Image (cartoon, rainbow, N blue to C red; front, side, top):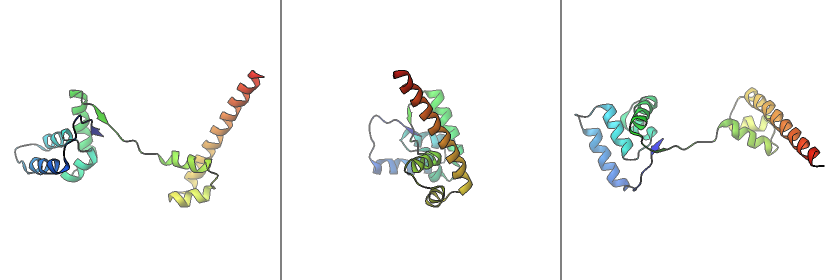
Length: 134
């Protein structure tokens, strides 16, 4: 999660500002987190810089976002399930996927069963639609 910034700030300026924030003995940890978030740093970056857990920073920032109505952008990464289904669509075997993703074979097998059920359901819907059109 990152604050939506209207104007981009130079990375050198941000670095200097972050050093100042971290060096400030008067500000609480939560205050420092909020200040760095307002500079456009991601929650993960703040946690690493401060040497605290991600959850701590996330909770502080989430509360600030809700209370202050701050606009945020979040980057969603592709889930392992989505990646497995993509590889199944490409025709890869369960074993090949397990090796490629370095994942438990049984987990891939479980996801393959879900994928097959989804494909069958989609085919039934297509048959119903094409049957109604005829």
